[in-house]
Amino acid sequence: MTTPSAELVLARFPEDSRDQLRAWDASDEYLLRHLAQSGRALDGTVVVVGDRWGALTTALAAHAPVQVTDSFLTREATRANLVRNGADPAAVRLLTTQDAVPGRVDVLLVRVPKSLALLEDQLLRLAPAVHEGTLVVGTGMVKEIHTSTLKLFERILGPTRTSLAEKKARLIFCTPHPGLVPPANPWPLRYTLPDGIGPVSGRTVVNEAGVFCAERLDIGTRFFLQHLPYGGEGAGGDGGAGRIVDLGCGNGVVGTAMALARPADEVLFTDESYQAVAAAEATYRANVDDTAEHGKAEFRVGDGLADVPEGSVDLVLNNPPFHSHQATTDATAWRMFAGARRALRPGGELWVVGNRHLGYHVKLRRLFGNSELVASDAKFVVLKAVRT
Image: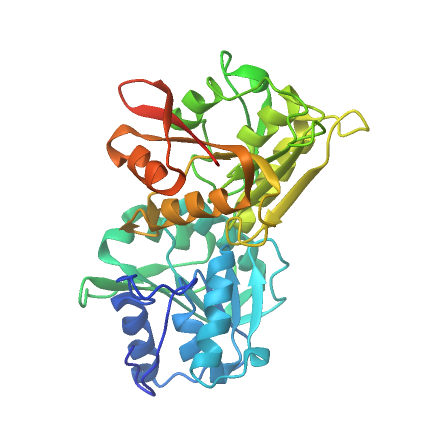
């Protein structure tokens, strides 16, 4: 990436030489170009929100920025990109969206996220730290910035306008209004699940901002919940308690359903989103009486099953995403399936729900040598693959 001050070598995480997607886009370049041309000194506490792969944080490393991200992969990419470009990772403070924000923000740079709810939550959390002299600049591709985006900045921080578009990217300029009182933060959000979806029917879901389908149960998960393997309590390879993984757990409703149906089994909830894992734990705590009668529940933010020992899992449940930010890709699903195969014991099973047109059965047969159709409707399929 070419910046006004340097040429940076950047990569996504985990690194894959076959990946053709860049670790930055025109909106990152536009923001950095604007900051250099404005002549405004980046003094005080510089906060970067929503950096996709650490491009902005790496480019501004000399200003000791504070990065706030919901993504474990972004944090790891940022660390690697700082080192790759000769910056000291210790000079940058890496925070998650679940951490307390700085008490004072003098420069606020926002890479507009895909989720308007996540943007709302983060601006509301940062608003008390923003003051009249704070420089607030947002950036995103034209297709990511809508009237609702601008209204959100204006409602929470102050008067807002946009720049002209350059290379299909646009900037957002916001002037903090000292007398503005931001609204109450509506997140996390709670709602009641519908009937007819197994053990979690009528139960409470807790959703953090930015979690997929935060305001309702998505139809794919609804279909999955109707066909999960609720029998087989104590399905461990040695006849003891089994170990189940809710992979890409989102709000944790799938793993919570299994914990209710198979109380002797252990359930690992894992996702690369800090918001998702927090929501999953809150959903589990709201519905499961975690006593000696239930197996252990574990909540882990990480890179899929990368840190799960080989051959240690009996059942993996997965509703894989097919987007990486705005890009449509099957790379995440492929990595999830490959990680599941490694983590499963012989005889262990991976259950997947997905849109029919995605052709997951082909990938599963390549990896596992088998794929069984468990259920289907006009839109979705539930597939099972067994580790041999």
